[in-house]
Length: 140
Image (cartoon, rainbow, N blue to C red):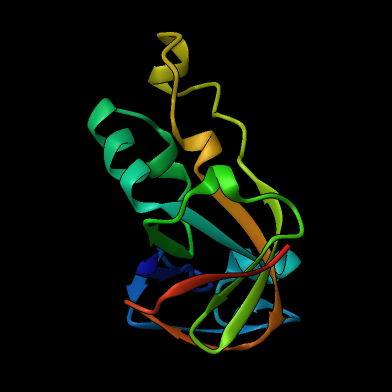
């Protein structure tokens, strides 16, 4: 399991791909306007993102994770689970998200894999993470 791609949404700009992210317990992802609202860090399965894009889903246009993962089994995650990525430790606060009602897949009544293959976390131990860092389950 690893961090495949890292992104942040700077104030007044579009989400950008970066080589590293600084995480801290107060603001989540440093320099990310969405994370600053509640200190959360978003995770998204890279495998799922690729499949949803191929199906024409809206989710990946409107929802992009701070940490795009590779090989992380979201079905094994639950609130309270802990992940170590680089220097940081995260605690999962929520797994999944609702679909956007205006999505073409929802309108066609097609099942979308994204709602169960993303998560939100809070930072327990801050630090810098880099693209390619290993992700390890480290508790609960």
